[in-house]
Length: 380
Image (cartoon, rainbow, N blue to C red; front, side, top):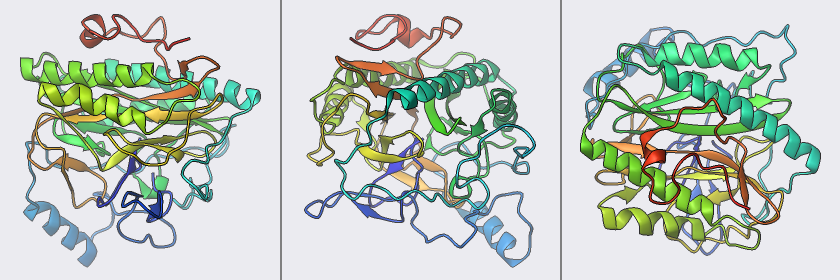
């Protein structure tokens, strides 16, 4: 799940720290998780909300909105419930949709995790990976994204965790499912997956007070060669960026590695959403921009935990926001892809806390990668 940078209107990408948080006084780049100020209670409207004038207006907006690609919003099921009679720790926004944590004063101030916190984050990351693998196996022709969300919800609870996206600034579901031209924050609904679709499933779980966040692409049946090239380039630029993570290196340099890899291949990298620090708080510093930049995000150090999650597009990298105020689609309707890990900076490299397990499926982009063949499990 992500952050967003100006002038965009949504994200939890990978998230709203505040309506707008400046990265530096000398820079025009901002974090912006919410274009509109939230009402107390934090819950956004959904397709399952009560009708009336507001409901009719939403229907009108959805019916007249100039969607850019083939995907349209479907019907949403009611928001799923996390029982309070189980030993599940709830994040501070679970009931009212409003995160309570205060972001650091400066963008280069990054929380250093203790050894105890690292152990808890490994557990959260492993749980998130297990849930993502299960969700990915369920992504088949004829399955709805709502059915995937129901499975994600159930499997998260089985692990004693809370599905982090649920009610985060009012988000109505337990995961994000972004199909074809949807860049991020796709809301699961009753649309059935079709042969040739590509889907990003974004999973975050909150276990024992800490978040584990990861996402992966899945191909529904088979797809065309252009989509396969997009998926391969997205995966390889992501691994290239993760390979450079090491104490003493600048966070700002991650973006240049990603942009320099995909641009010669004819792809673009989204600028309005970015990776983020993560731990007991869902989204914090550092802010990981996936394009060349000079933002003062600080240097990597042992104990830092954050996500890298580039969104790469076939066409333009600009986006449009759907009337649901969450879904971000490419402005030209062309396809987009994304991968994400929660990463830990180690003494001499990087460890993916959401890394694949011996039981995880191996995808074609891992087998064919020019950067790292096989499953990537970190460096050092």
